[in-house]
Amino acid sequence: MSPALLQQLEEAKAQHRRGLFGEARRRYKRILKRHPELTQALHFLGVLEHMDGNHEAGLVLVRRAHARNPEDYDIRRNLGNLLNDMNRCEEAEPLCRALVAERPLDSGNHTNHCVALRKLGRFDEAIAVGRRAVALAPGQAAGWHALANALGSAGALKQAVQAYE
Image 1 (tube, rainbow, N blue to C red):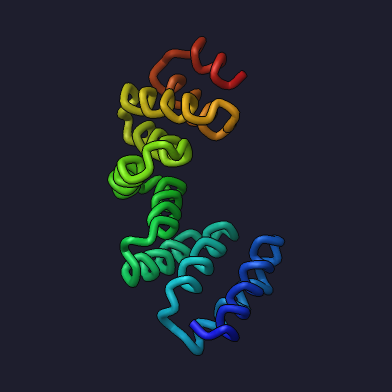
Image 2 (spheres, one colour):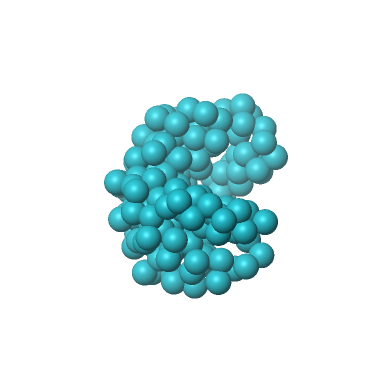
C-alpha cells in the first residue's frame, strides 16, 4: 500500500473513531472507488455501516473483506460481532468458537461466544463460557453482562442479578 493511500485510510479511520460517520463514509468510498477490493477499507466501512444502523450493508462489506483475507483476526472478530448483533448466531457461533481457540486468553472472545450460545438457547454452555470471560477479565462489564444474560435466560435469576451488580 502506498504511503498516500495509507494516509487516506488513516484519515478515514480517524473520522470514524470521532463518530463523524458521514465524513468517514465519504472517505472510505473515495478510497474504494479507486481500490474496490482494498480489504481494510471494505472492513472498516462495513463496521461503520453496521454502527450507523445499516446492518445488511455492513455485513456485505465485512463479508467481502473476509473473503479477501479469511485469516485476518480483526475481520473475523468483527464478522462474528455483526452476525451476533443481527441474531444470526448459527453463523456467529462457529466463528466465535474458533476465535476462542485461537486466542483463549482474550476475554472478549469468550464474551462474544457466550452471547452467541445464549441466543442459540445453549444456556449451560453460555454460562460456562461467560464464567471464563469474567475470570479472565473481572473488570470488563461486557463479560459480566453476557454472563448475567445467560444466567437469566437459564432461569437462574438470583445469580443473574448478582452478575449484573
